[in-house]
Image (cartoon, rainbow, N blue to C red; front, side, top):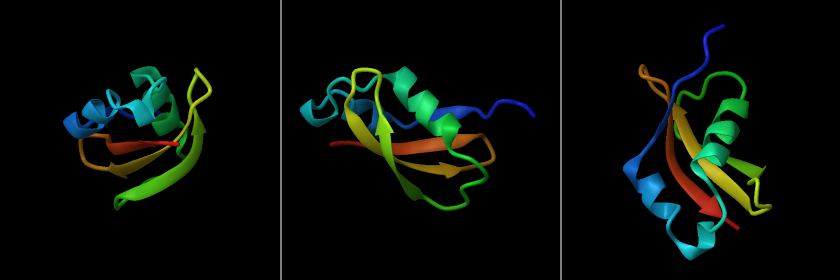
Length: 76
């Protein structure tokens, strides 16, 4: 099985700069997106990920022809 390509939207990258998402890294996002099993045909919120710094977060993702699109990140 080939690894899934993860695409992080510009919006999601900007969200990482906000205080609520402090401590969540791009690597955390890749790890979380890769851990989602199966196919995600429509935008879905996945809950209860933990960043390497210990910050809990959710993400919204959807699978496209190009790969898994991470639409936004929601820090807790």
